[in-house]
Image 1: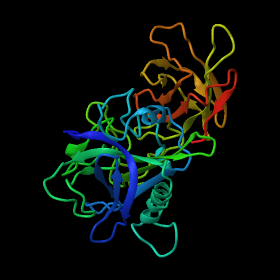
Image 2 (image 1 turned 90 degrees about the vertical axis):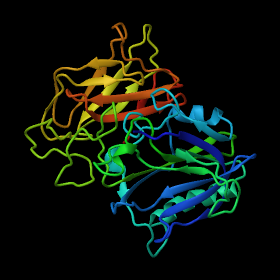
Image 3 (image 1 turned 180 degrees about the horizontal axis):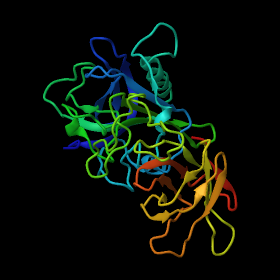
Length: 355
């Protein structure tokens, strides 16, 4: 079954401990003003697989508006779209090829998981206005004091990582969509606005493409690229059973059109050296409304898709921020992006996407 107490913890980090060989978790003590909690972050897997790591130093996503509005403390989350729940895949938080393998500890600066996490935690502890948001499963309150920092009652949050795509075994029961863990930092800028940074973790053993109704892997692992994104093996047979992640990418969108009625568009790029048949593929918005595609896109070429806003359950790109997802004819995600209200604010401007 999925996580039972999936939540987000908001507070101010006040103390920390690095992960070590005997305790492979980076620990953070967080104060909410009324209570203290501990965040336990995996920097090494219990099953021997390596941890994959992604840092977004400038995190832009519509979820930040909702996070800024909540009060410090623990907030239980519903595992469903449209709220604050994280889903690396369905909420277009990351692309699979962005994750890097890093050791728990290595000689030298900024070259292991402890260093990567610690640099942002230290920055947040030095900024009295900074806040940390930890997503995962909560525990406690316990009758005893916390084993690392001594506050009482002991309580906290763990599973700060991808929580789906686990292979058969002891962690398969944790699989589920819209319940991923993660760390998001909110820093104060000189002009009074917020600067956001996100840290996402997954294990090498976890598959990227998962089922909507349970979070289990829906594609077999790629034997030539274990723990890595699926890639096309036969350049003349696209798409294949193994999805060519990012082969066709969403590179731009006109969200806030100046015409009346608005004519929103999405621009696709074929990165392959052969044409890709888009018949049966679809574009989805944040509410899973879809527009089915047809035709093909030539090698190395772009194609601008005009959205049909008059159709039933038409794809809608809100000026308040949203998601755009590209799926293949089997309904498996190929690429996805997000944009914020700030990016969509200026009418007539096309939003570019880089991932």
